[in-house]
Image 1 (cartoon, rainbow, N blue to C red):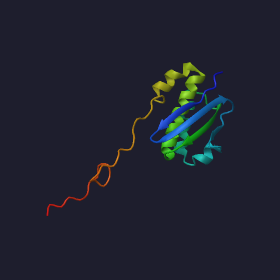
Image 2: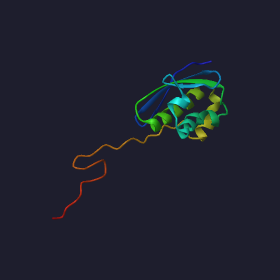
Image 3: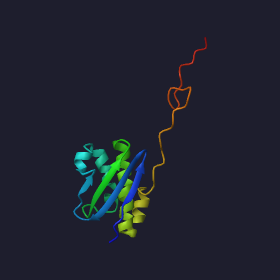
Image 4: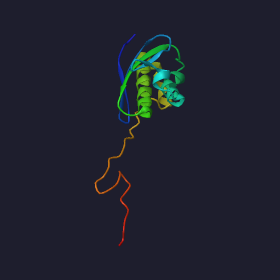
Length: 128
C-alpha cells in the first residue's frame, strides 16, 4: 500500500493530504470535518471524490491546509483527496477524471491596476 502525501491547490489555498485505509474519518488541521467546515456545501465538496469512486468510509484522510478562505481550502482538499485516491488505486483515475476532480482550477484573483480602484473598476470619470 503506497503511502504518499499529495498536494491540492485552489486560489491561494494549499492542502497536503495523507490517506490511509480506515473508517472514513477526515481530520483537517487536527479538527474534525464537521468542526472545520460547518457549512454543509463545503463538506459535500470535500467528500465528492469518495462519493464518485464509491469509497466512502474506506479511507481516513489527514489534511493540513493553509492559505485562502473556506471555499478555496475546500477545493484544495478535494483535489488533494482525488490525487491521493489515484495513488492508492490507479483504477480510480477514470471516474475521477470524468467527474473533473483531477483538474486543477486555474482561476486566480486578478491583480489591481494602478490608476484604477480595483482590477477592473475605475474611478468615476468626470468630463468637466
